[in-house]
Length: 292
Image 1 (tube, rainbow, N blue to C red):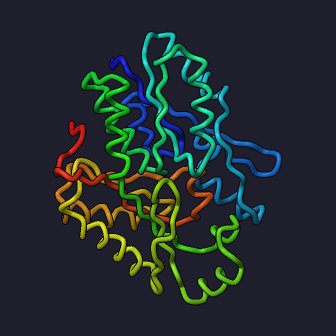
Image 2 (image 1 turned 45 degrees about the vertical axis):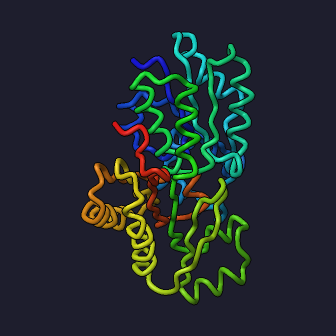
């Protein structure tokens, strides 16, 4: 058992079997419909989320874990004598990071290291897996934190949003934009830049055109990719995810292209059939970090 235990929150969207295999601690965010609050991925699944949105006609609110939630999650590992590295959803998107920092102060100095991923979904998950491999190699929390700080700006996160409906319901685009976008079949593409969800460009026309554009964007940077691990992350778009995986495996020669399901928090902001390609670039020297 590594001396350092890696924690993440439910927005990392790592496959459940990976969480078990690599002993990754997971702290769920909250999803609230009216007076009912659910733990992301524990009390509510993504398919159930969409059923509730259809029933209520509105999106849920999402909330960060409290400092008490973090303390409760961290305490058993600290009591075992282990040190903790927790990698959070971007502080630009949630107060999760700040609450984890508050919780960390309740433990002896150096026992809990909190890192702001400045990302979301498997953009976090990529960093978590690098941290896991480093912990397995016996790296200290400080060394792991330094590694993640180097990797953070190299994470490429790009998602195709299938419909403007969820962006509209969530207040991220106007009713007129939603109407015009729907009529013209405009599909926005979101990138994560400096920890924020940023509209990168729009694709007009069929969904396949948008997916092809996203795939080509990734393949154009093939020479820059750390081919250790590439994620295709989706919200109820399994068929498209399988096809993107096949193409990435064929064109990149990556050691692993993994498919992951977006959880409730990510899905509540983006909507069904959202799909993304996420990977880490090599650094300026062409080095691959923490390769297993």
